[in-house]
Length: 332
Image (tube, rainbow, N blue to C red; front, top):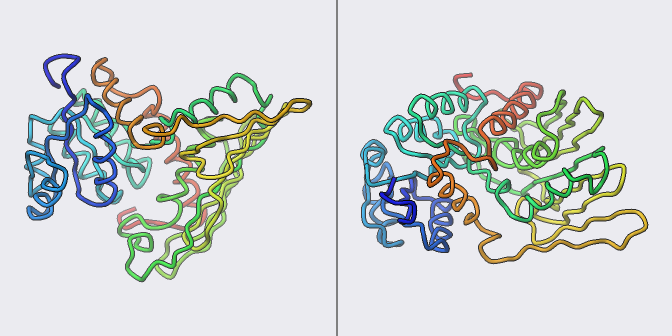
């Protein structure tokens, strides 16, 4: 870590795809963040990315990148099938890690990363940016304060229409393909942010010829009687909406529930209340990065906004759904 609590936090970005570019662009909104290194398995790709964003050091191998002791924290933007190896290499080298969601292909793999972070006494956080979004945090606080009474149902969906060509990563079991891991983690994480880990998971899915889920519905059930009605798809466009219904009202998030620009609180006998995003950095990856830097400066090894046990809980739910519908990845 940099010498003082006020010095810029030095970021390294591992991978050079669209996600890495978007995150790097958003880091520019934070005056106390500095991207000092990029890593790729290709020297040419690393150099091109570094030139594009004015990054001083480009590493043409993951091992070389992980060994860069001028990096305070790594953002792992590699495909999720590579998260165990990529994040593990950085943690083993003593680097703090923010790893793009899902943290790994399964709760077992994610548990290995958590154990390694604790062994090396370094920070680890999954990049579940939704949990750091200020408006989503406001919604969760309202629910926790009883704004809709006792929660009975949480509903959420996330679907993309495709079509995706043969060999695309979303259809490839070897790369953790399927709707659940890429899109379904958002509805599951939204429900579990509000209600915690469910007691029971029921799932139904349509599988591709390759054996990954293309269209999946989940019913989550909690001990108190609340239910989650969730849906994800890589073959159908959806509203990407969410709602929280309770004994005293309901909250509607009409679109992009994972980064909403507004939501509406409905309560009997009252006018609907509209809560809006402040816009700007609130709608980007910046709040997530700011939370990581706050944790590093405070000496925290995990974020209270994205606790490691909650991350594992989401993956346990996804694991249960995959087991029920028959999706298995190589090596499982």
